[in-house]
Picture (cartoon, rainbow, N blue to C red):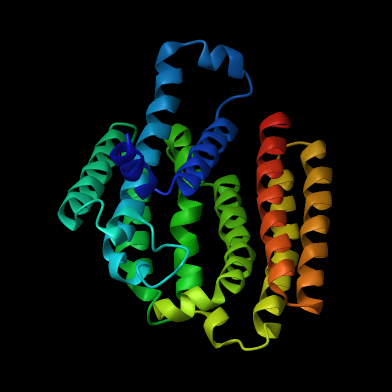
Length: 291
């Protein structure tokens, strides 16, 4: 049982669950309004299920391979030192095979959805495993590169039904992309010492006072307001979503301002929690107020 749990935890369940949510919402927003009739047909329901399964497998495989590549660095950081590949509970060989198996299975699954969704999944895998993971050690640009694979699953959910990328799809990607920036900046400030020990090239490592990182966090919180509201202007969601997105953005901005005024670990944690609240509630509003 402990071994099964160790393999499960290698997939970074928190990230994987988020992919399940964003892929599902992306797909749901793309389908016709008569959702009951749509999902009443087994073929359509299975298409959604297979899209979510494929996206989840790609995410899980990417996370396992990330753990494999960073297993030596993980030993140096308190937050990650107990990961199974870092402790040796799972061998490096088994971790590599496990990550490759999940990735290939996910890719094959999405190929049968449509080629565009497969390409987006491949882009997710490459940007996370091949580019983002090694880039964290050498460049602060990893903040932006890392947000790409986090935003693509929602886009993939949309294309799984539409088989095209249009304005609402781009805005869904933009919401997820921008949301990750203040989310990760606040997280990195909380674990500043860990990232220093790991030798990562991040703003949190070089920012002594926290003023720079907290300012950037606030800026991205502010940018998120018009971007999230832009989805309403496309006609995909209704006015309840519009009002809700403004309120949620205001709450997020409030915590961003507080973090900027006093860049403490406590305020970074509050901003991080506010980011989770923002995204989860925004997804619920998208689901409930689909036009």
